[in-house]
Image (cartoon, rainbow, N blue to C red):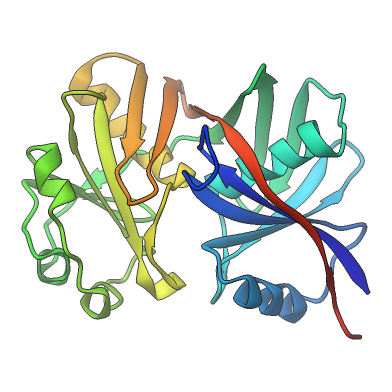
Length: 261
């Protein structure tokens, strides 16, 4: 069995920026074990699969070690493939997922994800989090991930995580974030228990970050940067219980993989 595969740099204006995702369009679902094995072989933070439905697509995302319920950059990459390579003419793409319906629109080169907001709640700072990050945040919140708030961008840039410690936390991962002089805020994301020591750009994290920073900065449209080594810029807007997350994407590779039945 041969499958087309595209590697797309999401939330990137140029190659070798943003977060690379492997995108594999399917006619029908493969066995889950096969999709997980492909994701492990690709060894990217996400490999995404989608199949057509009556009114859009059903989408699933796999890290090298397990399936996840929501992924932003790989959804952006999937929309990029559909709009720019496979020639979809729809104005809005609808993806059915484990997190409900996800919409993506295209405006020139900018793609916009329409995701559910996930407001984090204030919590006490776990000792494992402080130990794992090597620094105690000034505030801690949680939803799907722990959200560690720091005083400034330099604190976030200076973190040297201990992944063996962070793996012991009970949530998906840790988002470290702070206000920024150039952007409204910056962030980094660590999810070692999902096989992702540090994710280059994490679209789903902004469903948690936006409700927090909109409340702090008192404006609904924010410009953010994920300050990983590759880096990525995001334009975000909080609209009611939805978060709009916009960014660019570029093609790195088109190819074909062969699966032995």
